[in-house]
Length: 498
Image (cartoon, rainbow, N blue to C red):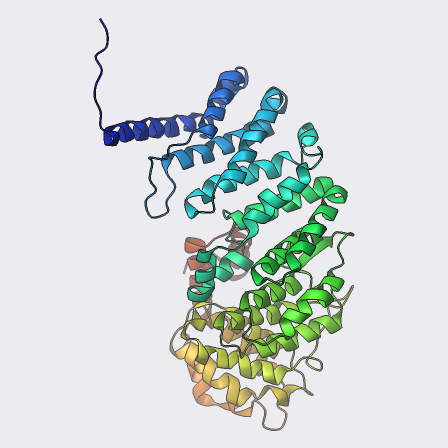
């Protein structure tokens, strides 16, 4: 007989729709799970129904599904997973998926262009940007990106759109400066729209540099034309992404584009932002310092000296986050070496060591949260490390460093103790000049305090284990394992076990 019609309320219909989406969300795991290789091979040989189904999901729109507190809905997560599946198959089964790629690219493209900037969509958009970043570099799909106006549209409607700071970012800059800096300079922004857009620009430049750079240059000129600082922030992202072909945390940019002159950009934009009032447009000042740090090995020594002097001034800004950016810049710039040498490029003779130490130490008094991050202390260590017999009196070590190190050791500020111990070790090797450092070097109470850190190695190991537990990275784990092995060899298994 006929199936009787059942009257359902809109709420019941919505619950059923949610249940269906949850089921689809769970099913998609069969194509991505670690144990799904056989399923992937099966799907590879019969892609048509799979791809058609995924494309239908990409088109789905369920206005009735509400987001809770900006969290992604099941449909958002489902589309994110579909983008990841497209990426997986485009990498593993190029020939099989190629007949469907035009429709797939179009669907992903539309998703990025039409999606709003609400945070609930971030995961979905990031997956879509990653898909575009990967396939644009493959010869198999090159033809989809070289059509007339395609790169222009990608640059404007995809890249620039997702580089803009949002209100949440501005609030984080003011209210949670440490978290903002972690995302901006420590690489924890791997799943943000901005990082996805930067990676897409770099990927496109690797493959289509000569075509794309003129397009991006026009966009940069347009963004700079009205002086809007939000747009100038986007320009910093674009110029850095274009100019830096490869970079490392240790050295900054290691290879650069021949089509962008970073020294000219510094002279035309960066210098002006750093020399302006220390409390004006703080985000642009942070961008400027980060830019110089990235290209520190491509800029001349006189520029680096100029930037350190600017950083010294910014250490007195009312924006405490600029103190940390300035300290970050000082730390990195003082590590730059002479070409083909291990000698430091910048010495205490050209760096205002006394003023820097004074302002860096004052930063701890101005911001109670300064001890929650190592930026200021690392810069202090770097300044002390370049002192010599001629510049030692500038450091005013008695007045500046003694109270700070005593506080760190007496309050057992674990994250800063390693730097305090290193500074102490350097101070013990410095010659006494006049009265400089004499109190610090001869103060019995101070050295009793240092010795009160009963087991410095234990302190260092505890910091390492805390890093392993809460914020490990592949690079850190590699060095940590090597360190443990060498420690066991040098000190012995019994000492290591203790």
